Length: 296
Ligand code: CA
Ligand code: CA
Image 1 (tube, rainbow, N blue to C red):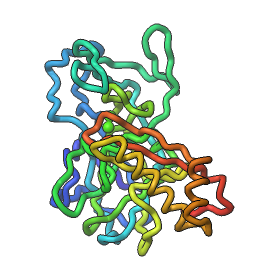
Image 2 (image 1 turned 180 degrees about the vertical axis):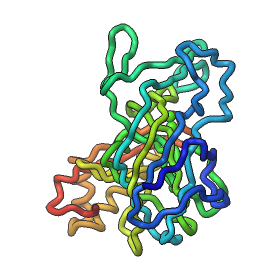
Image 3 (image 1 turned 90 degrees about the horizontal axis):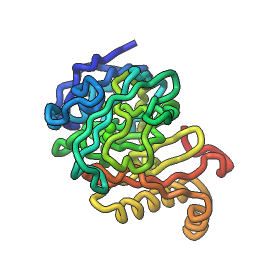
Image 4 (image 1 turned 45 degrees about the vertical axis):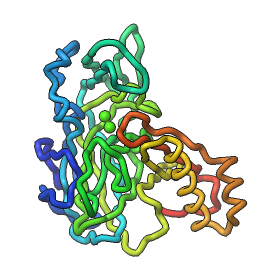
């Protein structure tokens, strides 16, 4: 199986980025990834001032997928996430959505399926991928930002078994990923999660002539998820909800009013993250409610 090493990183989704590997539709590929700090935090209590914050959110890739042409959809199924046995976090004054004094770097052990936190608190792991995206058609986009190309989505549902649908904007699509979290809460409120290095194995498929999936779109075992990221959380909430409304309209015989009612009853509008340059919302709708599965 194709494996991309963790030193093949870049810091912007960019059509001009040279591919580091080539795959065909249907292939499985493993992306080895560094944590979001480029593995600079080597011990608990590490000196914050020694971290080069310009080396943040490295994405491994890009992978050129041979059949992908602009206008196609890329289906990326997360088959496996393997994590290292320690994770890092930072908390600092001026970051996150409220003030916390000082500058702090921490390392935590991950033993089996649990993170060994402080004061006897153990947190079950729920591994997920923070950054996954394709190159945009126009100007390069920093790996700090989420957007229509995917990118720094920080959606906790993007774990093992989840499928992310992304647009192919350029020939080969140029898929990259990184920023594994051992666990993350909705909001990611202090600006980081349990940041770990590891390996992500995905299956990539090119879908032709599909205009019925509002990207970036996530399918999990239990939910359909539409996503939106904007400067304002208000705007993202409206956009994510409206995307799901249109998705339901496209895939059912329900009227405009019926879709609205159904979403208001059974959909969940959630915050994904509030700390990236564009704030993210997701609208989830249970897969099991519809008579048939809309997409796979
Ligand atoms: Ca992130
Ligand atoms: Ca992160």
